[in-house]
View 1 (cartoon, rainbow, N blue to C red):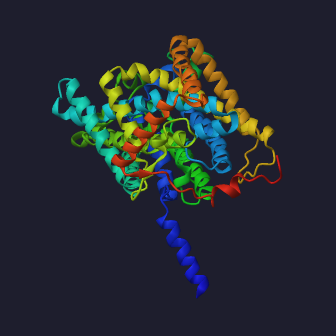
View 2 (view 1 turned 45 degrees about the vertical axis):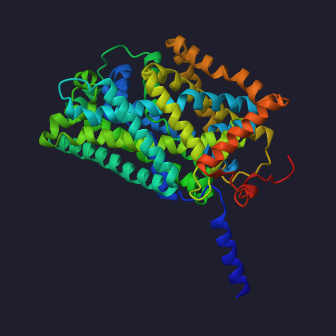
View 3 (view 1 turned 90 degrees about the vertical axis):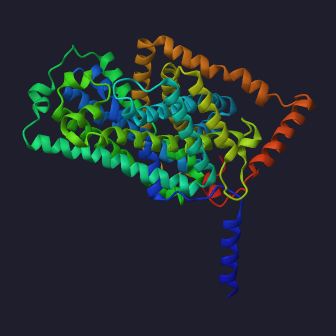
Length: 497
């Protein structure tokens, strides 16, 4: 009886603790990965891969291999995720391995431009597709698209502030919805193939090149595909909210990445069953063109599918990017107010509000599509630095407990591929890559003034304390209580390093 009572008391004290709640099970974990990878890209413009590949056959090979490279990267992140079981993804791992400055530079570029810009672009895509039926003969008005995008961001911020469970349920539902839309495209495409409409997929035709293939063009095709697969690392941003992360983090990765690769490849095959390469290259919204050709009176399904897909994507990006702010503040790289959570809902409200505000600012600036080019480079750079950190950690701390330990060939193979793509990016778009580096390096003086300099004037500390106090009162937030039961066994060494 006493033992049972102690167990109950332990459970109740754990549930009453003010901390990030573990409410992400295996299904929700898969939904976060799939929902963040599958955005508007596969519905709108897979033509980038075809344009650079030069043939249907090679473009399909690029899609399959792109998924394979993505799988190699995700295996490395699975090892890092259970070895360093902290929320924050790339930032947390790089900070742990290489120290504060390198981690801060990733955090700075992500919070300043990467996630707000991505969120703004997805929100604008959502509003354009929702408003398009009301403006069939022209583009929706500039103000209307910005207003609807802002309303969408505000609504989903409110949901994420109110409950982790609500946010994960939205992610689950909308991920299933976008998968069903893609399954519809695949099924219609397979029916077309069964009827004999597969001329573009015949080997003799599929490998007819519209241009002479070159290593540079193939590398750019892979770069286009890798951007379509971006988001595969997002579950690592919320590790501390995953139920049994040692089991469910790798399982979710092993389920989600092959599934997305299969769906992407089959969707492209379906597109080619009804459209010639020339038609696909001429279309600005491939899925919509596909629907108009084959779905007849049900062609409205495709624009709605894109809108729903982007809505789920906004929710996923808000959920994960707010945890990055939370992790950065907890490490002392951002104001401590952002490391606080709501006393009752246990959600990081200040971090969510910062993400929301930054996104609305980017929406007001207007030049989102120019900024997204710099974002892509920074994002891709962070993948390579993080996986290089895995190799460095193996050498620096060989005795660290690693529940998952991938073969050394996996990170080496990924880094070789990454270096080739990065090299061709620098060669083909030096200005974009250069500006991306400049954006990241502007964080160096900010780090030394804001983080490294400890003996600031007392008035600065008093101002920070006052703002933190007011923020706590307004948002009803406190520092979370730490639960070391999960992290201690994982980060302990087998022997003294």
